Amino acid sequence: PRFPTLPSVVGDGAASMRRAPWLLALVSPVSAFTQAPLRRFAASRAPMLHTTAVVNARAESPTPPKAKRPRAALELSPPDGWRDTWDMIVELRADRTAVVDAMGTEQAALQAPAEDRAYHALVSLMISSQTKDTVNAATMAKLRAHGLSVRSILATEDEVLHELIRAVGFHNNKVRYIKEATRIIAEEHGGRVPDTMEHLLALPGVGPKMALILLNVVYGRCEGISVDTHVHRLCNALGWAGPEGTKTPEKTRAALEAWMPREVWPEVNLVLVGLGQELQTEREKLLRKCLAASDPARALALAQRCGMDVGKEAKKAGLLDLHAKTLAAFLSAPEAGA
Figure 1 (cartoon, rainbow, N blue to C red):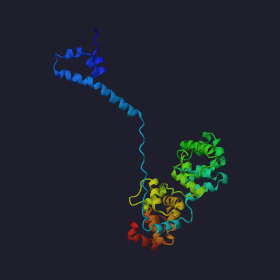
Figure 2 (figure 1 turned 90 degrees about the vertical axis):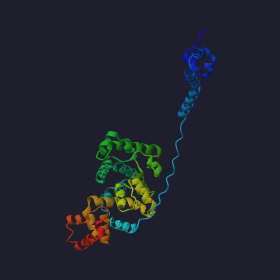
Figure 3 (figure 1 turned 30 degrees about the horizontal axis):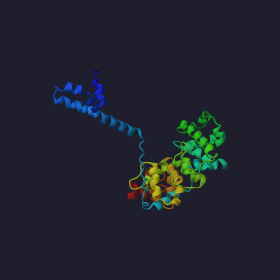
Figure 4 (figure 1 turned 135 degrees about the vertical axis):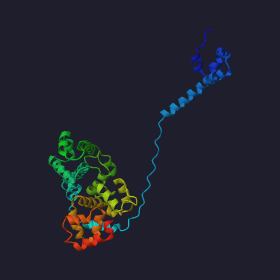
């Protein structure tokens, strides 16, 4: 008779061992030490194959995503003295002479025809990231001269649009974002810039900061506080971003919205962005406003806390003699160096 081969016996498992007594006869002279492993190996094949099949089946079945835990609402108390500080900032910014006041999104919207106001504001916001306001304003002027509407931008070749906005940061990406966002506005919103956070954030290149500004400036709805790097830095310097501070603008936004009264929200971005710009590039002008404020000591303390070296700037501007008494009293106070 023809005997089965060893691999087929082993592959058939324990049942094959029972059907092939010749194999046991072959190994019978050998000690139990040799037979036991062979029996165990053959008998174990079937369960191994079954286990592998189960594992493979589990691997092929989709694993449902873990449900995200809802983020707990941040609870913060208003910082001590914040209202007095805010009122002083508003006083210092009452002249509206910062760069953002002349070249920001509000101005871009005001210079547009009524039917294109929202679209001008949107494009201005999209090209503003990583771009100075002066460059942004010059680029918007070029776009207006070319024709800035949903219809005209859809008809504009990518190469032409690239030449028009090449001065702004990341212009290659922004060409793509503007064209794709404009297409979505035309096809899905009837040519009208959407007026909800959900639909604005669905547009390529549009983030929460831009969406919040657009809703506030164009549609008169304030759904949150728009926080850029100026607002983020100043709020941390003033202790308005929680006891431990924050690392990102979005976390600063969450902190501010947790305690700041809603009636203040619409002004926060423009007021603080302008203050931040003056602290960076127009320190002498800001210092003179502090010295002329209703409470010069409080204004100077605010400027110092926000990063201005009051003594150094006063000396550079030649104001030490002109305002000797006020500056001397401020600079000699213990908190001046804090």
